[in-house]
Image (tube, rainbow, N blue to C red; front, side, top):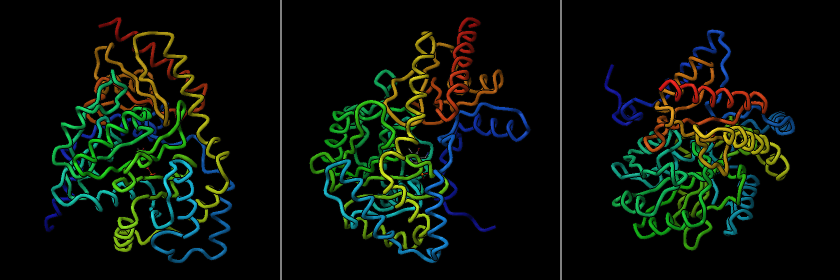
Amino acid sequence: MPALSQRITTLNGDGSDGWDVFYRARAMIAAGVPVTELTIGEHDIGTDPSILRAMYDSARGGHTGYAIVPGVSALRDAVAARIEAQSGVPTSRENVLITPGGQAGLFAAHMAVCSPGDVGLIVDPYYATYPGVVRSAGAVPRVVATRSSQGFLPEGAALEQASEGAASLLINTPNNPTGAVYPRHTLQDIADVVTVRDMWLISDEVYDSQVWEGAHLSPRALPHMAERTLVIGSMSKSHAMTGSRIGWIVGPEEVITCLVDLATNTTYGVPGYIQDAALFALRAGAELELQVAEPFQRRRAIAERVLAKQDLVRMIPAQGAMYVMLDVRATGLSGEGFANALLDAHHIAVMPGESFGTSAAGHVRVAMTLEDSQFEAALHRLCSFAAGLAQAA
Ligand code: PMP
C-alpha cells in the first residue's frame, strides 16, 4: 500500500488517548455485563418528537435535495438573531455558516485561521478532539495548563507565556470536561492576550444553554473582539440533537465567505430537512431548551449534596454543562487507576481526567447523563469506594 499522509497518520499524536476505560466499559456492555455509564456527553432523552415531526414534514415536503451550501437563509437568520440576543453584538446571516455539528465547525475554523505549521493553543483540560482538530488543519497544538485549585480557569500569566508565536486560541465555556463557566475577568484576560498577540480566538460555546450559576458570556461580546473571534455553536447539547449533526460558525463576514468555499469542497452543506428541523427547534423558543437542560441542573445539585457528606473526594465547582469533575487524589490513585478500579469493582464507568490532558490528572469526569436516582446511587458508591481505597492505603 502506498504511504498515507503525515497529516492523517499523526492525527492522534502519541496515540495514548486515555480512552481505555471507555472502550473497556463498552466491551463489558457488549458482553452483557450491566454497566452504569457516566462517560460521554449523550443525553438520556432523545430529540423532542415535535422536532422529529418538523424533520419528517420537511423531508416529505421535498427538502431532500442539495441544500444551499452556507445554510438555509431562514436558519442563518435565526442563528444570527439568537447570537445577537445573547451577546448584544449586531449579527446577520452573512456572519453565519451552518455546519454539520460543532465538530465540523471546529475543524473549519482552524482551517480558516491556521496555516500549516502554525501553533494552535488549547486549554488543558480540553475536550478530547481538540488536539486532533488542530492537527487536522496542519497546525501544531500547544496547551495552556490550568490548575484544579483555580477551578481549571486559564490564568493570565499562563496564557501570556503559552501564546508567544501562536496563531489561534481555542476556548470552551461552559466547559467540557470541567463544568467551569468562564467569568468576565477570565474572558478579558483572554481578550487582552489574543489582541496583543494579534491572534484569532475560537470560542466553543456548544453548552451555552446549560448554565447553572451566573450567565453565559461570549468573548465575542467584549470590545473589539467580534473582529477576531469565531464562535462555534451546535444544536447537539441545547436540543438533544447530537445525531442530527447541525451547528454553526459565527464570525466576520470575510471569514464566513472563505468558509463557504471550504464547505463547498468538503461537506457541501447540511441536509435541508435537518436545517428545517433546527429552525423549528430554535423558533420553539427557550422553553424547549430549558426542558433539555433542566435534568443536568438537578443532577448537579444531587452531586453537590452527595459529595458534601464526605471530604475525601472533592467536587470542582461546576457552573455549567453536563459534567462534574471530581478530585480523587486523596485515594492515592491516578484518575485512570481510580476509573479502572471503579469499573472493575462496581461496574461504574467514568472518564479519567488524564483523557483530557495533564492538568486534570488525579481527577475523574462524571457525565450527569443518568436518571436522578441511579445517578445519586452511583455517586454514593463512588464515594464509599474512594473511602475504602483511602483506608486501605
Ligand atoms: N465541543 C465540545 C466541548 C463538546 O463537548 C462537543 C461534543 N461532545 C463538541 C464540541 C461537538 O459537538 P457536536 O459536533 O455534536 O456539535
